[in-house]
Amino acid sequence: MEIQGLEKKIGVSFSRKELLQEAVTHRSYLNERPSWTGAHNERLEFLGDAVLELVVTKYLFEHYQHNEGELTSFRAALVNADTLAQISRELGINDFLLLSKGESKDTGRGRQEILGNAFEALVGAIYLDAGYDQAEAFIVRILMPKLDEILQKGLHRDPKSVFQEQAQARVGVTPLYKVLKEWGPDHEKQFLAGVFVGEEKVAEGRGFSKQEAEVQAAQEALKQKGWK
Image 1: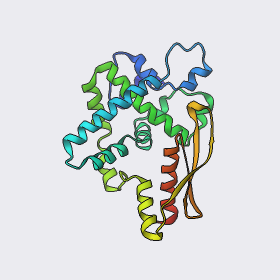
Image 2: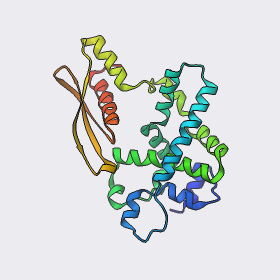
Image 3: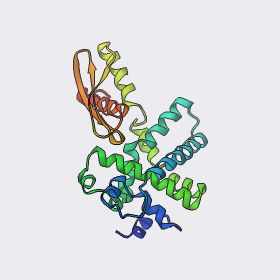
């Protein structure tokens, strides 16, 4: 698809179109196309992650009078991979991603990770192309409206903390997490974690880090137990 179509979807016009192209180019795409002259988006993702955290932190500090711990949990819920992947889908970024044939077939957690990273790369591209103020305006317009839903649904509460509170209150046991399996190359390693209450394995979770796998396991465990 023409990259100008993505500009319309996100409501941002780029002076340097190559930055927008780079933001939606995954490393795997270059592996299949040695003649491709553009770059993949990992450097932009690195930059965009920092810009995103600063903008969100500043916004929360200016608009909410909560304590540091609560503001930290709000920020974590806004910038986590699931939230950013959801926004990427809503913006239509998925339709413009440049991926290898193998990655194109993955519609599970791997694609979620790629979409979240692409949003961070997009923020980095806007910052380089138009400066901090434009990046801030984009983030506030696109991301911050999600906060009301996050707070209403309690999504800012860490699932591991919630599951631990519930397990200790209901059965007097502190949950234990174990990595059950890990696979993949070092730069894309995946983990399968299990959460145990006593001898019972309550649930499993997958992720691209041990922490992410444990959080997924805790979320699933809360569902399995029916604990709120």
